[in-house]
Amino acid sequence: MAATPASASVSGSTNTDSLDLDPAFAVHRGGKLEVRSTIPVRDAHDLSLAYTPGVARVCTAIADDPSLADDYTWVSNVVAVVSDGTAVLGLGDIGPAAAMPVMEGKALLFKEFGDVDAVPICLDCTDVDALVETVVRLAPSFGGINLEDISAPRCFEVEDRLRDVLDIPVFHDDQHGTAIVVLAALQNAARLTGRSLGDLRAVVAGAGASGVAVTRILLEAGIGDIAVSDSKGMIYQGREGLNPVKEALARDTNRAGHTGSTEEALAGADVFVGLSGSTVSEQAIASMAPDAIVFALSNPTPEVHPEIAAKHVAVVATGRSDFPNQINNVLAFPGVFRGALDVRAATITENMKVAAANALAGVVGDELSSDYIIPSPFDARVAPAVTAAVAAQAAVDGVARR
Image 1: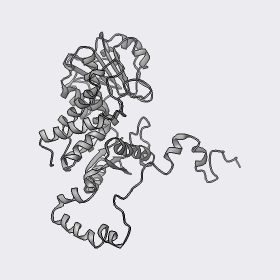
Image 2: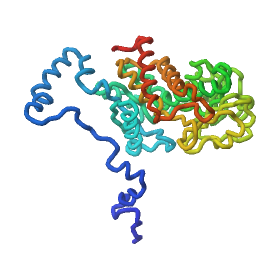
Image 3: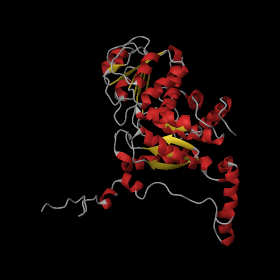
């Protein structure tokens, strides 16, 4: 009989005592969340109000007027963080159980940065119809739905269908959180180099959830020209084998008609946004226009090392915390949901996303430099600025109900 490895128990499961030597495992032991009551239950009187018989009066009132649930339950301040575990971080399709630490982490960030309560929900289904039906059935318990780590192109249909049938905010953070922060950072990078978005030609590597959403928000904000690539090269009208999402991109982008590789399209480009996990050569970066801007956002390995890119361009950003200008979704989603929940928005509009980006860019203000185009997640000004902008825009767009 073979000896039992030191790292495993006799049953074959992992020895958790040894895992706890890793500080990451120690932090996660027992999970990162708990439920706490907001009122005391000290005696029979407290119990009679918090539960029966007092609770029945509240239930009856809500049955007569369902809108009272927003005032007399937790619903108006609670978001469901929903995933099927098919596109978790850079780990891919690891399933719902393995996705739970990430969803717990997301819920933690909601609370820490936006004072929004959030519940992680990992679903053991990947069929689009099943995902949509399940979330619709869960929705009465929540004031918003944050979709997370659902693989493309399914994620687009899931979000679109949920937005159509639910009257609460639905937001796929892998798409829109990334897009908001990229737009904010690019606005400031353009300002730093004496240009506007309309002056820029951009190349986006990656046509997954984040690449599509970044492209869409930059188009909405008035980017001069933008082209997108996938693993087969540039996306253009007439290219065979495009799915409906990419066909729409082909119609709306790439006015210059690039048909080759990402690196070929970078020649003379002003902006590179990497969201693909691929690599880009130093030569390609050097071929970009003067005062170029590089956002190499793949994690943990950027498409090009920031120090290499910095030799040839004016501004570099990454998705990593150990380099300047981190493009981090936590700059966006807590404030976006806080603002939407505060006014009980029925949805999150495109204008609300752009407003969030504008507010985020504005936090930098006169402190703007090549190493500071986007604020830190720990800047206490960030969430309030985004919250206020989103709430105000919801009122302008007519989706605020408070």
